[in-house]
Length: 383
Image (tube, rainbow, N blue to C red; front, side, top):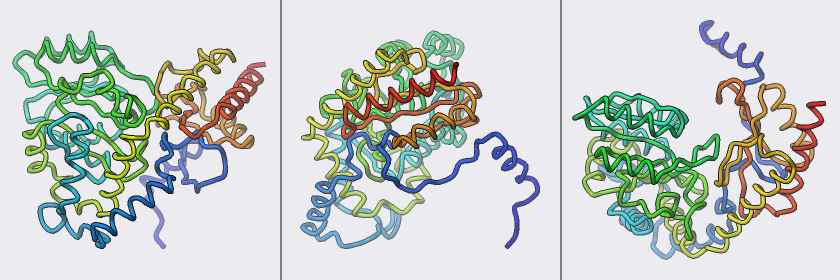
């Protein structure tokens, strides 16, 4: 078997030397504070059973879409699901994609045109950055949540079509932008606001509609990217927005046109998950209680300064140094808690962290204990 070219081997060697090489891990019996399964939908027997019943009742026996939706892949189930998603998010249309990354790349490769300008938050996720690279528009980043800088960039580019891109919950920090202020700027300057809601869906809003709808701002957002792979526990994503936005993406997004569609089981799972989300307010309320309890406990234990401020299901404790943060995460794992260290260069050097993901199924006792252990390990390492 051939070895890697010499040109890439040094990169692997450097990663190993810095303790930054990523390796896959199998499921374990540890208490889950690592996954994005905020509501436990991915492991729900009820959702699995109801999806099976739907497929049998509607004679959806095909195991694959068999082609792109332009060729042989389209089915009435796609239209039913997209209609439900659009109504749930109080918008004109929804367009399903195979993943959040496909939806993001599809949007940015299809909608912003040459001569347009995209302003994006410096902490936007890798999928957004991949999409920007495929766009013909110019992209400029602004400092995290610095909307004064956004306005200055807008004023320097008069008569230019401008898209402003942010996330409603930033995946590594877990914080939220001041969307109301960003909408004010966008409306005043006639810009197009794009919001990635991957980590807000299922977490914010009475029915888990997301951060945008919780604030009642849905009519002011040009496009929202709803990713189902976190709180909904299933594969896929959707771009929600106007009819003409959908037409543009359908016709010009290569990640939509030239990709085999989702399987019918995947689409049915999305539909059933959304239907379940609409009526599972107790599960969402339990997640919210756990978030409040986590924030209270970290403050009581003197850990507030360690964490990035946020009210989402993601809470990041900044522990500088790959070796240091890895050591503490391993100690927590040895005590039975599934937590992962986020290392540089995935985050900037000095911003290494342990990322806590909270779930509706975490008990308050588990939350209190994991934070108690964190405080013990942190403060003992400083002696």
